[in-house]
Length: 239
Image (cartoon, rainbow, N blue to C red):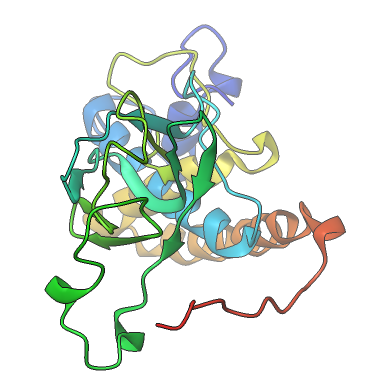
């Protein structure tokens, strides 16, 4: 369903939310307020899908690029800033001087066995591990340009923020399975009823949201069924 399509309101999430709340006057539920609530539910839905999908990384289909980025490496520089739209790091790779990428392992600080973090892999070289703190990514050891390519030498694969709606959005659709788009209008309608004390509609809407949620999470958990369940041993390389 479209987010706000006046020409065909039967295919409009905004108009569906109005109907669910029992109002017909858009001034009672302005589009700006609806969009704020819709984006809040959009984020919730994205988190549901990620938690259910396991190895299948969800990405909002409204983004026009892939959820990956490259950035230059700086000789001897250990920390690199992350874009604020990055939600979770899925994979980190470093490009060596021969043009080959190498996947890094995430550092588990609990396994340093008494080694101070500042003392771990002090000598610059080919990074083997990464650590995420706040909006910074740290490499261990720090890169040495004798081992790594400094030009676009760091590659990240990540999950990211939704591509949210604005008040001027009309024919855009949510970037997940269209069978479950109505969760957004239900959620926005629930928020309106909650704020305005419309008790007779609130519970029914909430129950409908829960039904959709369970179906969506079930569908998301089955998308990568062929991969199967595996127990993968952790390689800590002596840490």
